[in-house]
Every structure is written in C-alpha cells, then in structure tokens.
Length: 166
Image 1 (cartoon, rainbow, N blue to C red):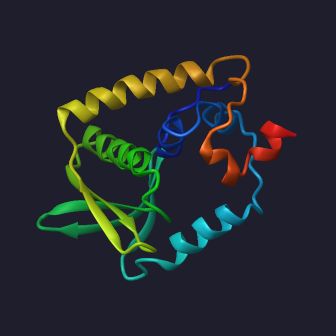
Image 2: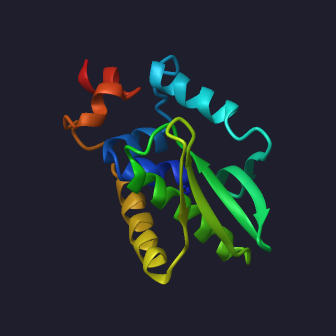
C-alpha cells in the first residue's frame, strides 16, 4: 500500500467512526447516492457563494477561504452542528497544516441551515491533540483489516451502512 496522508476528512471521521477512517483510506467508496451525501453536497455548493470556494493546498481541501482583519480566514461548511467536535477538529487540522506552511489564520465553522457560526483558533493544546490523532489515524490505516462494525447513532444515515450491515 502506498503512503497515505492524513487529511481533514479522515480527521472528521476519526471522531465519528474509526472503521470509516479505514474504509475511506483504503479507497472503499461509500454509496454516492446516499440522500445525506446529496444534501451535504447541495449545502456545500449553494452556501456562501460570494466567498472563494474549495481551495486545495497539499493534502487538504478548504471549503471557504477569505481575508479578514489582516489574516486568512478558513471556513468549513457543515450541514449540521450535530457533530460539532469532529468539525472543530477538522478545521483546526486545516489551520495547523497552513501554519506548518507559514500561513497564520483563523477558522470559522459555518452551519448555514442553522444560521450558526463558530470561530476556531489554533492553540498549542489543539496542535498537540491533532498530532496524537494523526498518529492514531495512521495506525488505523495501516491495519490489515478495519475494526468490526459497531452500531452507533451515525449508522442510520451513513453512506457505508450497507457495507457494514449487509
């Protein structure tokens, strides 16, 4: 298996389902016609249209990027605040990756359906947490097999549910 790099999506799923981290990293594609994936794509494509959208930098894809108060502002668009912690860590990961390239920035989580926003600032504590998560994700990825499926509330809407539960 070629070297796999951790990205924001894997950080997000790490906080939801570690089995899904393994499946994604191994190129097992989720059901692309899943209603919730369609909804997420629609919200992503149709929200914040005045701002610069989806910028790829190395192994990260930033949803929205703009300038604010003399610094770069990175935005992450989510359909719901239900998984706010995983979204917060994903955005912090983007900020950390930018910082490693010499770009200081602030982050904003955006939940357009709920008309909510939350500012995220990168701290040393967050960076240390992200370093540990990144190591754990690599351990998960390099296992021969994924973890056995465990029923969690996320399973009901998951695009991998047929793969795990058939």
